[in-house]
Image (cartoon, rainbow, N blue to C red; front, side):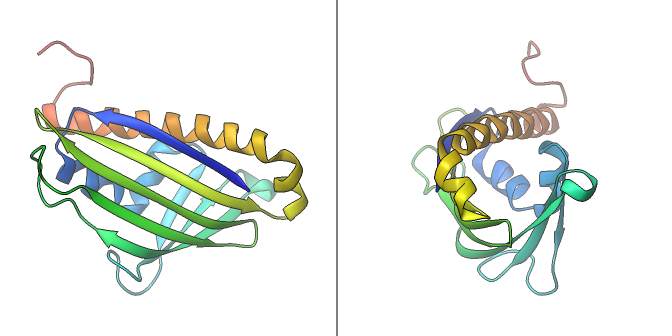
Length: 165
């Protein structure tokens, strides 16, 4: 089992960040070497299905996912309820579960927490390389969430993140 958690604070409202995160094809904008497509049926909410294709050429693989938990944030205020989405991964290569939460913070900011608990096939890979896979996952998703934050912050403010006001 490879398990990791990544946290990223974003200078944008929780509802805006949630909308970006559940726009499944947009994940390909932030995750290197990944393209995401939705499958027929609902595009959001419990039961939505999508496939992330990661890698290059013959080293690419599909990571099909189904949303099994869905609770959007109730608003953007620090006392509003956080949003949480959980997916079940059911691919030949990667299986397990992942979830993210979006917690409203003061100042129209939010915190994103991303958690993965996955097994990679063949299972021996995960059993022997679990710590390496966890580290790689943590580093990869940290970079992905930083890219998400830059993208959403720029869309909200109209300027690159980190720019003076």
